[in-house]
Image (cartoon, rainbow, N blue to C red; front, side, top):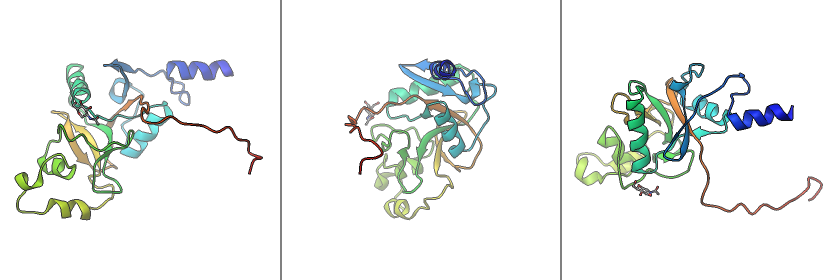
Length: 194
Ligand SMILES: *[C@@H]1O[C@H](CO)[C@@H](O)[C@H](O)[C@H]1NC(C)=O
């Protein structure tokens, strides 16, 4: 029993389904790309997140230009450029885009959004220069925090970033993330302790 569990952890098996999964290592990051796995379904954002978690992974975040570019280039070269892929990016709960799996806002030093209006809402472009007729600050605050166009895909064929309805059924990219920011000072306690 323990052997099976260990085997599952080591080889990143989808234990529930008993199927072997394939992950790739790209620039030091381990990714699971649903398209590479014939038994992996296309899913909505929430179920894609759950699927990644069931593999011990998270939906992928693209915090640096290099990471975003290497994934985009890989997907195109590997023949996956004609599919949309969920990332962990969303603006659920606020008008602001965040990478859900790292908690980081979108990186202001580069912008891979397909449309500049989305980049403005993500705070990546100066609204004055690019959208003088409207008031993006107000738009951002007032925008619905629902699932409509609330989650970010890599959109084929350019694989640039595009907000999409979170309920849309898409391929997805999971990654192994680590938290570098905190030391968890754990206090050993027992359940009998008050
Ligand atoms: C933002 O992107 C730049 C360029 O890729 C990178 O050097 C920097 O570390 C990124 N910042 C964060 C907070 O990830």
